[in-house]
Image (cartoon, rainbow, N blue to C red; front, side):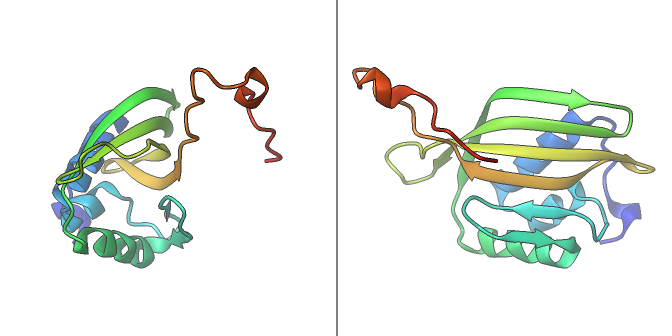
Length: 150
């Protein structure tokens, strides 16, 4: 797909909406239309390795879409940090899979968009399983946030 055929995303929010619409539809061409045509792009799916460059990112999405699952997303706790050329979005993805009796545990994702001459484009997507919520009657000592060296 050439840049000429790619849609123009005037805001990073419109690029993000197109990203999740493509994800929901399992549409590889629409998904890649959101991404920058740059070998410096990268994508990390929950529990997976880092895919770098257009071909690796495209192949990672092709494999995900090949399973044929119908997904629905609800984005919650959205935070945005935006500058002139870069916008970083942190979201909780609440994902429902068609045919499954209940929603999966949420995923926390960081989506990074860059302003290009053809509008805003995704340059990074990093998703990880969100920590499980603490049980309401649990021992207070166990409800403390784990210490992370990162």
